[in-house]
Length: 139
Image (cartoon, rainbow, N blue to C red; front, side, top):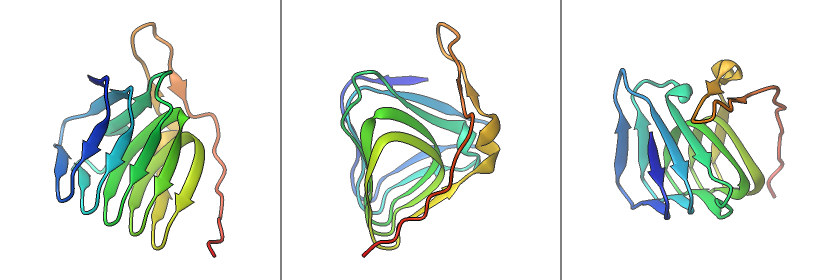
């Protein structure tokens, strides 16, 4: 478990690896950005092994930029979400709004997350109750 009180930004051409047998729960207080050509390389390929939770004060932006990849689950109900060109997202995300899904960006919902329960201090679990697939026509 990692708590980040400021902004979290991955600079171009960087990687964060989650190795086999590992899992990460990340609490964010500031903004989140994956710049171009970055990867959160979840080697387990299980979106439940990377969970990002926004604190009550996390009201900035979750942003994935060109050629970035992400495998995980994200719960940031006060944040805006941007997927810029060629960003690939595998998992599930809850945010205040989706501001953009730019050219060739893809979001793949992982149905295995329907059973995800996240427990933290106070034993208040987040549980996926339902989901609805949306198709957005880009102009």
